[in-house]
Image 1 (cartoon, rainbow, N blue to C red):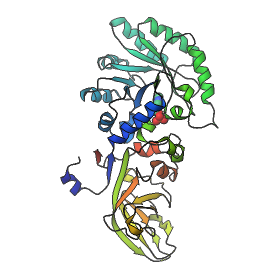
Image 2 (image 1 turned 90 degrees about the horizontal axis):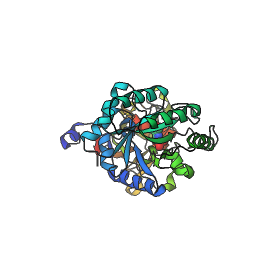
Image 3 (image 1 turned 60 degrees about the horizontal axis):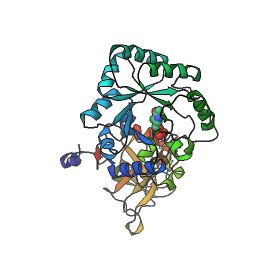
Image 4 (image 1 turned 120 degrees about the vertical axis):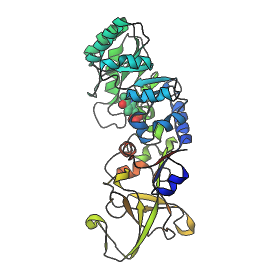
Length: 374
Ligand SMILES: *Cc1c(COP(=O)(O)O)cnc(C)c1O
């Protein structure tokens, strides 16, 4: 994938995944929650970063949390011997024996799953461990408080190792319901007297609701160095590093006249004579088509005195290309390195200019973009 021959043949776009940044971010999370064990959440191909990179960079985690049992197979095949949590449990009861073989921890979020596990227990001796999920107000997955205690007793009686789990709807903001406080109250009431380890906190709760940490935290987005709120300023002082750097190059430069229009729909009209850089990267690479004029890119050594500069995109993002206002970049030339997001340009900033959050852009990195794990 990253052989130099391929590098020569490919368009210049490349996503580099920095395992040192993974290690740094995991260490930061441990500092924030030294008493808790960590489920590193690597669903959606590790938020677009690849399982390979996650395993390489996060090997000192206590466990990996995933959705697809195929990812558990992959992790075991590649030597991971620690714990693996299936975040939505199993989708068919026939998969239980495979989950056990792979030594997965299972989330149980529904009465149906409780029944599958009760039936399974009858057939064999096993060591399955369960994270029983309470719907404490988000109303997505989870047992309602009235069903929770009975389910806990049933599974406990069936011999499973039990844990309590819930998930917050609004750990990243204070102006929405249900609040973390309400959900915590619901959780405490539901688990009262039922002795078992707990798991509640996602990235936002780890940062901003320190009373929720419990025994197992479940960070996702922070491992990747991206903000849970979608706004980079909210984590800028917390010392996390971007793991994915999406970079490309200028492949052509247009000299355009005042009043001329750029790209599909002629969205951008030149306010003066200016240079426009054409960058190899478009929505078929996962760069958002909704990015507004003004969305920043960074161009290496393109400024006065050869410093890196931030330039705004100008014109509609197309399938394979982005056009950039080079008025700020007198030294930009064909072949200049351009960062679309990463170290210099937080993916959150691109997301904000596109009406979405960093999570979505990371997960949407297109399969045609070569990935290099370093
Ligand atoms: C995705 C997910 C997380 C991680 O959320 P972040 O906001 O990325 O930290 C934690 N818990 C559950 C149940 C999830 O589905």
